[in-house]
Amino acid sequence: MAAFQEQVVYQIYPKSFRDSNGDGIGDLRGVTEKLDYIRSLGADYIWLTPFFPSPQRDNGYDVADYCAVDPMFGTMEDMEELLQEASARGIALMLDMVFNHTSTAHRWFQRALAGEKQYQDYYFFRDGTPDAPPTNWQSKFGGSAWAYVPELGKWYLHLFDVTQADLNWENPTVREELKKVIRFWQGKGVKAFRFDVVNLISKPDVWEDDPSGDGRRFYTDGPRVHAYIQELVRDTGLSEAVTVGEMSSTSLAHCLRYTQPENGELSMAFHFHHLKVDYKDGDKWQLQPPDLSRLRELFDTWQTGMARGGGWSALFWCNHDQPRIVSRLGDDRRCWKESAKMLALCLHLMRGTPYIYQGEELGMTNACFDRIEDYRDVESINYYRILSSSGLSHEDVMDRLQARSRDNSRTPMQWSAGPCAGFSSGHPWIPLSHGRREANAEAEEQDPLSILSFYRRLIALRKSRPVIGKGGIRFLFPDEPGVIVYERTSDTETLLAACNFTSEERILPLSGEWASAELLLDSYEQPPEIAFHSLRLKPFEGCALLKG
Ligand code: GLC
Ligand code: CA
Image 1 (cartoon, rainbow, N blue to C red):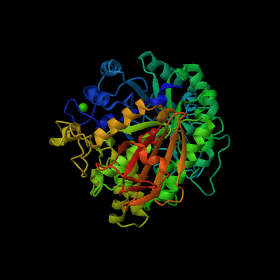
Image 2 (image 1 turned 120 degrees about the vertical axis):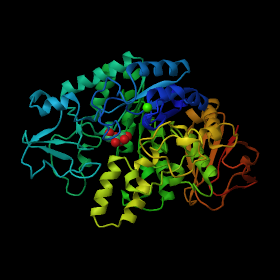
Image 3 (image 1 turned 135 degrees about the horizontal axis):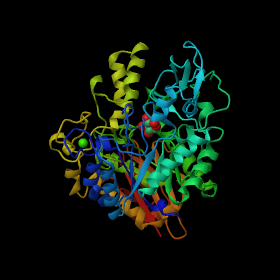
């Protein structure tokens, strides 16, 4: 079995992690400074989101040069030092390859704009008139997915921001260029890669309007996506690496194909269905309370389905695009610690490789910005405009941003209760969270009952109990509202994880053999009551039991 099945990844958003030179922007030397912290957590990999030269329209996901370091984050020497220092601590770096699109500031796009046909073919340029985009597809950040270039009399495709032009993977030269990027970083010793929205790289042969959607049906898990991934992996020797693909609006069947080892594609996949249970009608900008039955059902379907087909999932609640989970599915006011720990336990004991996003291990909460000027994220700012002009009141729009903005997770990492939370000695590029400041590393470091200590124990448990990495999985109590309970089994042991996602007590019938089981972890200081035939869970309690 590949080692990544027993490992844990820590995600760093460098801009908000640690600023080493006081300019208010986190940087690579800031990451190096904090390597001992990450090591003490027990993480094996650091997924570092993009630090490449970029106009920063989408915080670095608009890449202008894949093989260099943006001066804002430091130098190539800083990067080499980080790689070396991390490796000295047994930590590997996972770099973020944004290969669906480049920034329009990339020299390829600039040469396309200058009229070079060869470079126009790196992208999707289509002849047309300014009043008629080639299709009615919508950008994921709002508005049309096409932008017009009057000088050329052509439209180009951008599924994200207007400055993020989609690359034409049908062009073999593009594929060769991208392989060179992988080889460049392999040459620096990088052995793990994340591929940004990689299931969107294969566009359809015919361009047609989407009569009822935003166009995603045509390019999501597109016609040649598996062949392109296989080719990239084969030609760069990536099957030796740890790889993860971000799969947008994907399906279980495709995720199996992306990750079954015999297909020569990726080690694992991020899929997002479980993070849409609070979207009303599937729309991120319409709020509804989380549908907990749906959440349970989705975990059951995906976990059981991926296990049955021999695929592998990346397990995550948080990343730089998602609100903080304790504010979303927990209770960050009355049961802050208990719910943060329960959520961690629920996720980390499932089948897959867990990812922890900076600050999650401290129980950091949403940003709670109440002024539009505090937001930095291009999607949030676009949607502020779109929702406001659709007739919603300012208050209503601000409530939606508070719940859904990607900036919720992009506030500075909280290292201490001191000025600027110990993130910077200067003025941070984005305000601190208005949420809990006691969620900080210094305060939690020494406290055995802190959320941080709980994450450390969870990670250590994964490494000492093979059933977590290797075992099978089965979900129990499908009809019990608001609880997620599952069993992990190997030949020699059975682990039970039971989590209460509600603010009320829940009593579960449990077979008598569990009465003498070992309690591995609990989100409360007081262990749960295990009577002979029942398990009583307090509000937001999560516990793990083991029997031999
Ligand atoms: C991914 C990234 C996100 C970015 C988008 C476009 O979803 O995680 O931050 O905006 O791709 O690159
Ligand atoms: Ca800095």
